[in-house]
Image (cartoon, rainbow, N blue to C red; front, side, top):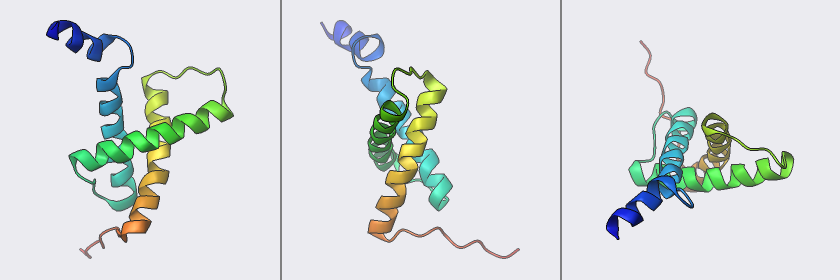
Length: 102
């Protein structure tokens, strides 16, 4: 029974493991673009999943009946994560670190 449950995570139904990986990637990329650093393992996944959901909903409204593969899904997730990360950074007062003069 344990093997069946683990295989469902990897290949069947809602692919939870793929969502976690995509969310982590999207959150990390968004954090690095906006603030030069990420939000930590759990923070990246949470912000990335929320951003991926928001980006997916916007894409579904703007581009109905469109199917996206990995790179398209990652792009939409990163765009949504940029919005969510910016809002979260504004709420928490997170700033981009100053660059040191060489």
